[in-house]
Image (tube, rainbow, N blue to C red):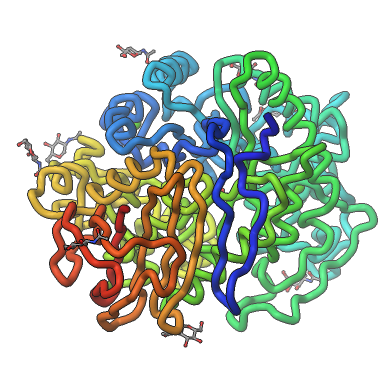
Length: 592
Ligand SMILES: *[C@@H]1O[C@H](CO)[C@@H](O)[C@H](O)[C@H]1NC(C)=O
Ligand SMILES: *[C@@H]1O[C@H](CO)[C@@H](O)[C@H](O)[C@H]1NC(C)=O
Ligand SMILES: *[C@@H]1O[C@H](CO)[C@@H](O)[C@H](O)[C@H]1NC(C)=O
Ligand SMILES: *[C@@H]1O[C@H](CO)[C@@H](O)[C@H](O)[C@H]1NC(C)=O
Ligand SMILES: *[C@@H]1O[C@H](CO)[C@@H](O)[C@H](O)[C@H]1NC(C)=O
Ligand SMILES: *[C@@H]1O[C@H](CO)[C@@H](O)[C@H](O)[C@H]1NC(C)=O
Ligand SMILES: *[C@@H]1O[C@H](CO)[C@@H](O)[C@H](O)[C@H]1NC(C)=O
Ligand SMILES: *[C@@H]1O[C@H](CO)[C@@H](O)[C@H](O)[C@H]1NC(C)=O
Ligand SMILES: *[C@@H]1O[C@H](CO)[C@@H](O)[C@H](O)[C@H]1NC(C)=O
Ligand SMILES: CC(=O)N[C@H]1CO[C@H](CO)[C@@H](O)[C@@H]1O
Ligand SMILES: [Ca+2]
Ligand SMILES: [Ca+2]
């Protein structure tokens, strides 16, 4: 049976605007979805998940002690942000050994322990992988400075462009700026050359024009595959391939934000360091290695890539083709990048419809609303935390993969971190006046498990980042204990609905009725279905659903509502679909 038969092949726009209808799978016995298409992927930020030894920093044994939470949520895959050996200049995104565990997090033994505990529960394990650069404390870098054989060209070394006539200091090769601000070049006396670093100076870029580098990185990937890892989330891939010969000057970006300074990354266009064709050749080699493992036992080893490129067309190149696939999917940041405060159903429909219309044939979508680099969803549209349930429903129930950033299931918010407590490198390098614009600390505070000291995260007197002060109310236990509604209860309802054939194989129709005040999508399979409806404006709305959507019956059962839904509506009650009232900024899911 062709693999593509059960996938969504065709996207037809129905009516004039803002509507999309994906066909129902016609097969009576559709091929089952692959694990990575169906399972919810939960992003663990290891420093903030659970501390097992009271040093105020989360660790692997801590994660292992919280596996019940994943099972309870119906999460089938865990993606752990970097846990490799690291001097922690960029909290694990600066790796000093690609095949060892950072002692703060544990040992290779505790990793194997966690990995087998996850396997026992049938939860997949996805490692973060950061191939763009290593730490400057990686032995490779030292050997490269010393021009040792093989390692001489492991990094991107260039001669100075001259000397500063007043100070006599060497001048960098060109005007390239690091993503975190300041020159992307740092001088090393011992080699009398500059090296390239697209992030901090402690993160020298690896030189992928050197095949020995690709070989070394493939060996690291193999190391983890042999330990039973199910896949990788590959970080910052557009930065992978640089073309520093000749050393072009990057032009100033005519569309730069008005607040950008000449020392900021956003001030320039990055024509020679960003999204170059060589990226795809390197990633295709990674994919080939994964596929060898997949073919051996039939269990898919996966590669998801993070690529912050400006258009969907550029992003979709990361899928590759059916003949030569690259990533299983590139992460979909559209709900973060294009849905801003003051949005309505029209904006959501644009994002959903454009993805399905442009996605290459036979590929699989994915949805997320947050990660360790972005403000939390419960804060982006502040003060409206009911929005959490709406976005969790979009992420978990649209066709495609679902990625949950830790804490989204309970509606955790950004914390207000003082300058004194700021530890994130871009925050620190921006200084006390501008740090809030750049720091990612607010979305990285420790997880709220209960109302004990430090929310049950740690027994330490000082956690690595301060706790969000709302944890006595916003925590896992309180939301499970309450007799009333809670975000986590809604999340579990969504997760259960995702595990049905209607979700797996159903058709999808989306609409933005009432001039975009509302958004909704229906999923129907073999005469059964559900519809999710969202009121994104500040007034009560009434909708005649069968008039807006196809194949909706007169009566339906309430499956789930957002927390505090108005008018009061009991789960399991029967409602008429031609006259449904949805309170301001609320959402509801009906089953039929
Ligand atoms: C990395 O750590 C491993 C332990 O897993 C060790 O055997 C290896 O020598 C280290 N590699 C480097 C380059 O230091
Ligand atoms: C492995 O996990 C068990 C509990 O499941 C624990 O008793 C043991 O200490 C762990 N070993 C390591 C090395 O983490
Ligand atoms: C790097 O190499 C030099 C010798 O060239 C040595 O003195 C130094 O300790 C090494 N540094 C690290 C971090 O390995
Ligand atoms: C040379 O150094 C001085 C003093 O640090 C500085 O003000 C000037 O901008 C530098 N010139 C160049 C071309 O970098
Ligand atoms: C964050 O904290 C600072 C200093 O503690 C305070 O001035 C500011 O108003 C706070 N901001 C918010 C949004 O609470
Ligand atoms: C935490 O602070 C309390 C009171 O100051 C002190 O008694 C205790 O020893 C401290 N605990 C740790 C782990 O430092
Ligand atoms: C939740 O209920 C359990 C059992 O009754 C109780 O021990 C715990 O303290 C409660 N937690 C919260 C945060 O309400
Ligand atoms: C929704 O937003 C769009 C612009 O994005 C606007 O044209 C439309 O009028 C809005 N609709 C409502 C009901 O606010
Ligand atoms: C819908 O429900 C009403 C009662 O609420 C019932 O009278 C009616 O027969 C139902 N219609 C259908 C088509 O099931
Ligand atoms: C989304 C993401 O993971 N971004 C990472 C890109 O790489 C830099 C430097 O390693 C990290 O700081 C970011 O978190
Ligand atoms: Ca710890
Ligand atoms: Ca690079």
